[in-house]
Image (cartoon, rainbow over all chains, first blue to last red; front, side, top):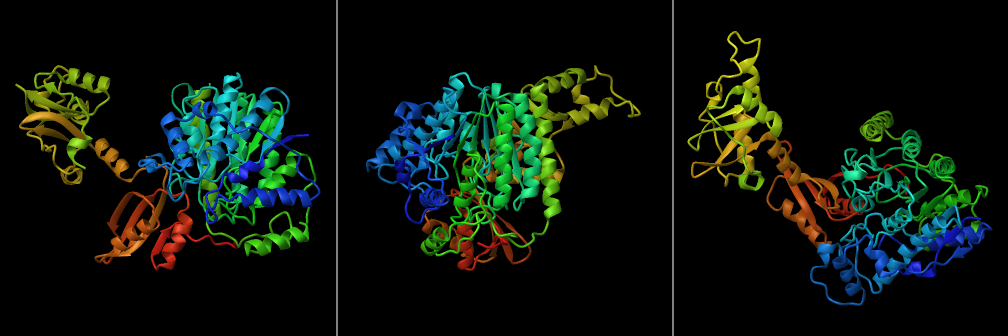
Length: 377
Length: 209
């Protein structure tokens, strides 16, 4: 049975009641899985150590996180992305962030030591954290720490990021790493945070041609998303030949997400997760680690990640949600939750420009393959 | 942003006795298209790769041989820039004269050259992404205080504006394009709309919440 990494201390990574990166997401998910008859058996990690963090972050940055964490004044904190509206300071933030890194690192160790093939880390995915700066709700980059560890153990790592935002932090830290393939599908940075993730960002040095970015048009729908996904992923994975696949499974490309403009449904997510598991079986001997990530629609996120959990565990995708859970959380959130695991169909009215958007994405995927192919043979 | 901020040294120049062949080779080797020409250390002209190609073209009724001197084909007394010129002024000069470069002189001494590419770099620097930010596009009335209203809105929310650019759109309207240090420009846009700003991007999502 696949391992699920979690510790209640993850809930201490919280920026305040109004902040979108809410620990409620996990609370709702764990409760939902429980009432669906699959109470989650979790494996507890240790928090990552300071030295683990220093494998990818500069000490001058870590020192500031530590200082703010214990209430010290740090006059230049904003130069390090800390104390901003996105990344407010909270007591104990250093340890809270190290818990999440520790979980992703624990997942990596289980796979690396051949104790497990499929692992789900119920947290982490903090892909915006930069070498010396917090950014976009992310303090420490758990993904980069885990990738560094895996690469040091001699594994070639493929990193796939389906969060709606570009994985700029992971890319920055591993931009010249020849043992790491990174693939990020995201809404175009033309408008959306963080603004990067263009096709021409292909890596440097030995990593040249191994950093893949596929920016998608705002209002891209599932059909187009899956088309380009299937176009890029098998080719990239087959050529690179990774030993393990690490997936940042952000759920903010869902149509109800308040922070972005992609239009995936839960059915699309089911297809994407199924593909990822198939690709892992085909190209990494089944070895795959999932982390969570962004996802700010409390109406959608627990359902998306519940689907991920069920698929990873080869459990059936149920139709109806337990009425008690729906009622309880509808009341608590003040928003009506659907009565079914999948979104209502259709979930949103027909959109204009569907054909143009699909054309555009197809062309971008072709351009990406063309741009990388000359580095690969 | 001044010309002195975007010039890259050291400038590559050649003497007026240089042959077309050698000038061409210098351009190829250095991967450049414009060469200032010096006589006794003073700027006397500019030669471009286009000048060389046209001068030696088989289509020309009187093509120059490769051994001819650049002085014979260069543009004389070229328009120059001062290091303290604003870049937008240089851009306007180059656009109006339809030329691709301006040698930069300080006390009659050649200290650099700017080309169209340098101006593109300047544009990218003024508008581009070198910090994680979201983009916001707002339409404002062209009257005093409107931009201030927008920026104080950001300041009240403790947001840092990374870059801001405004340009006229029609007679009485300007468009402001901002990059802001927040991942959540959608709720920012909603709040702006509630304050009766016309936000062009990000749009409202046409779907159920």
